[in-house]
Length: 98
Image 1 (cartoon, rainbow, N blue to C red):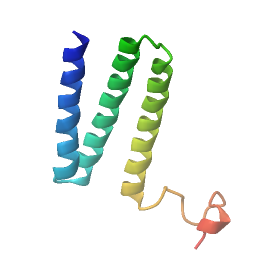
Image 2: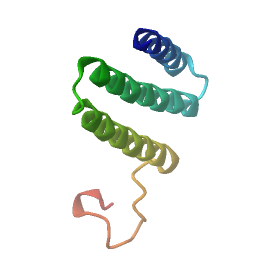
Image 3: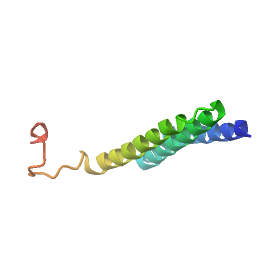
Image 4: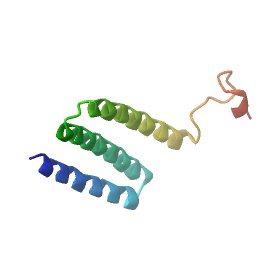
């Protein structure tokens, strides 16, 4: 049963990778990479269950958090062209001031 689940996840990962490489817009590619990351979390969880190591779930949760935060950061970078520091603000680090 879990072998079929692993095979299904691998097929979905392949489709997401294909969309990431062939996506017509950058947002399609970002969504595909995010989907690939979610499938990776599922794969880590299934492999942890199959190997009898529940600590893999901790790794999967950390990977899911990193995937979410990196997706938000990339989308913010694409929208603003930088990380969204307001111009002329005191919140800008000295190395980023223009």
